[in-house]
Image 1 (spheres, each protein chain N blue to C red):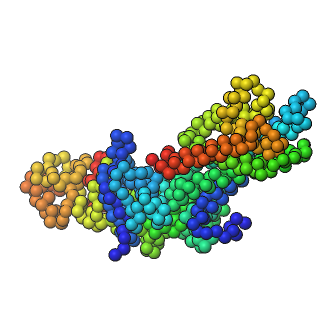
Image 2: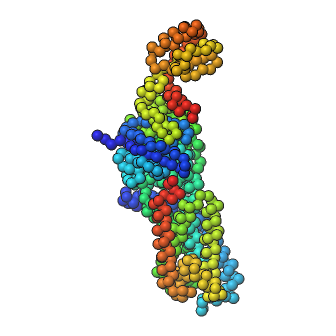
Length: 302
Length: 261
């Protein structure tokens, strides 16, 4: 049996009196495309920074392919490529130099150059390879930042908000390249605010809230479990019968949204309305998306 | 050119960091090498013009000749400090130090790369001043090994101190305070421009508490075969100071002080 890509065991982190992580347990298997979601301050970046060795855990441990990130940090970091959230760069060097340096820190020499060429091409950076980092646009700097994390060809890739403030074209290009890496066997862990990205790309999702994981399942299970379907009814100014209130997800200007776990509940809602003499003016049935799950779990904190 | 050197994969990491640090200062050599050379030469021209006929420090040693080793060593020390400290504070403020912190480099490898880069920058600046100064004065070297030993140990000591300052400082003004309130006074009051025997007894004693004094005096001893204290004492003080600072730096790096929260 292969070792998990990432194994997180009871990780706590205190910043003074702030309990930022409250005993996080999580296992991510090799080859997964995994999303870590949560509102700002949920602890996602803290968790990733502990994984990357930038922050020390107060308790618990994390292993990358069985190598502890504190006690066996050299092996663990060899296996890990982390794209930092902040748009940072070294103004002294051009893109290719930076990638060579980054690969060199991991012990990779000129034999790694074909891989660097592949990264440059995959991220649309080939014609900027000899441009100084300082002279790149924001989007190009973001690409270079991603390229740097990939320079040593790590089997586990962590992208912390990689598409924040990035245009649609780059997002698509980036995801195509990352999907290709995932197909080639790389494990991808992603944090993002764009929930549709996580829904489209990731096979499994963990949602964090206030330092804890509040949901962990396959994307499809989460969608089914938390909000199978949504029924939107235009009813006008009415008072709903008590029996329908548990299913009510929201209401806006006489439009009521109900969360349904299965199709049979449509009849339940409609019969309830008939019994209360409420007329349905319009009706719309839609699949729930990850945003609904996210909102139902982390609600007003987002 | 550097790529052609065959190196083992295990030392490629620290070697790459060293190469990056060397390229970093070389890319701005006008500021990191030419500027300190010009500054030292200005000191040399002005002080030698004003004092050469009036001051004789050792027997038969003209003031200009006396001044040159002190100026070279002062520049070596200041530039070794500047290299490691400015690289670290810039990387911290700009946030790009994360690229190094994410790698498997050990604290010892990190230290070695920054240390050697600082030593090399110090030596390059010192050598440039030496070569230019040869046009002005006939320079004799009584003991070249002592000159090399003090240049290496002195730049290592200040390079290490620069790493400590770079790790500790969070802002550029904190780093400037290190430069202006520690490095500059200690180097100016170390006997670069005078022999401490010309000072009143109290200040002679006070000067002997300044580690820069031993670096300058020992380095100068290598040129003239004479100094204010024995070169063995100077070598011991400088060597011991380096070991203490290196130990503190390695402790800081291993614990992740200010780098890994």
